[in-house]
Image (cartoon, rainbow over all chains, first blue to last red):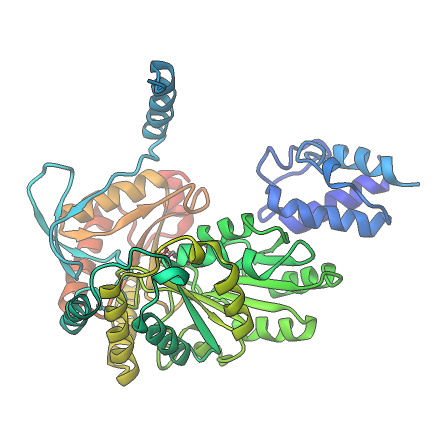
Length: 80
Length: 415
Ligand SMILES: Cc1ncc(COP(=O)(O)O)c(C=O)c1O
């Protein structure tokens, strides 16, 4: 649909996908075991740097990071 | 009585679940001292069986070495059985400090602090030296005890792909704004037997001003020309900021661990590390035993040299037999079977042939990577290894996996 989805999806694939698992915008990332909750940190930092935003820790929950689409929704809240 | 039927039922259900998922762990009782030849009761109540042990961390054959046993006896006589105190109240003897100094010398560091175990060293060290303004960047395959230590520390945590130095560099750049960065790795990885690229890691840590932490539990005493560890192998002795290691494997096999490294970091542990402050340290006879182990290993490299040649013999034997092993040259030699049930079946049949080796499968290793992890020791003689090879060949033939590729084995047995 838009650029942000592609950027985030590509980042997740590069960072976390070791084999050729298919990834869609709705694939569950954390509950699906692709991103472990430890590694969410780098995803959060990547988003903050890329979009010049700051996501408060209490909003960076495993639920909010559970798919590319959910992450996009979260980021959009903070982009001016 | 607060332990109601409901509560009991809840736990029973979880345990039954583990059983039906094939994840239930069962102990095997060994009636002899730890060595190449042991006597095992398994399952519980079965008659004793004499088997060759190829799954102990007894890399240097020190667990029942007569001089070590004698030193422990002498230590028991001279320094007693226990201390009934933690270190900083009245639980530190002269021999504790002697051992710390010997470890410092052996590993080529600045100072050392003992812990009850390496699990405790890893659990306590990060919280003692890092704060919430810092970041820990760990290899994705580090040992469980390190993961626990990371969880107990308020610093930010991120990971890099296993042994992927480009990815590590990206992470060091990403977190360059942090007060301190600490890169965390095992020296030798316990499940695969591969070795961290410490030379490259030292270079990156220098470039980005990061601390380097190495858990050398599966290396101390035998990796490197004089057995000092992975840092010796990689030519970076004196350049690792924090080394943790155990006395429960190559260095005697009893128990205990330590943090060794920069003196300020060691002092931070003495002031702040909770397993050091709130748990008794290593008991006197064990301390005396480890001192003897280090004396023996410092005087001669015979044992690590024998381990090296035994390992080469074993790796070549398995490969020639047509089994798939993980490449490398450490004494941790995983025989890959890929399928969990196959790994269990092969382990059971090896036991029938008098060879004790255990199958590892998910969740201990990734799905589809089930294996039998064999571990070689300087306590093995060639005849032990020859007998074990014969058993592997016989069992391998039964399951028709000799000379087969990974794909072929997976086609026959599934992932
Ligand atoms: C890499 C690693 N670190 C630490 C430990 C824990 O050692 P200890 O038995 O001294 O707690 C182990 C033991 O399994 C290990 O493999």
